[in-house]
Length: 195
Image 1 (cartoon, one colour):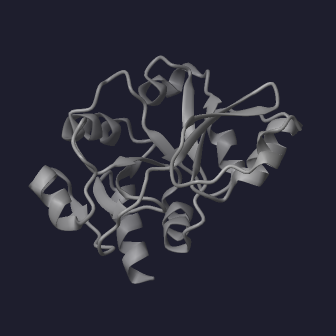
Image 2 (tube, helix red, strand yellow; image 1 turned 120 degrees about the horizontal axis):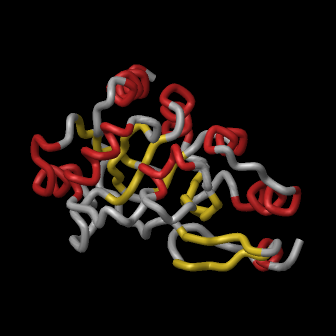
């Protein structure tokens, strides 16, 4: 518990760290800190047009991004979440341009991992992406992450060796789920059919 509180305090102060997510090691920073987001792009040498995934701790968190869900979309999300599936949703508000990078969409994930959800409840939404510079192999251990980032990030949380695929990435259109990237999250047929 103390570890979670310590991580949450650091993130709320604008710090950036490498933490075990529900899939792989990820870079974590407060989604509503423009300064932290700008720094995360620099640390990762990430394409500035490519948005991060946003981790949330409840479907209600989507309202923080001015997202209004229709019943069909909410029903699908309730079947996919919590889980290892990231869902692209429209985020049209200009104030979130620093997050959506002009795409007017963001991928959100509501994880099932208890320790991660506890952190999210304290920090609010976090940006996340695999712990590696763009085009490099995702770090499977903290030692690998430290080789990539050294003192460039503020803290590291060791979760042992993690060998996993990234999350499955989907979008919802007209009540249907389109899989854009197959990953760790499983999509069952009853979810992909029209609601």
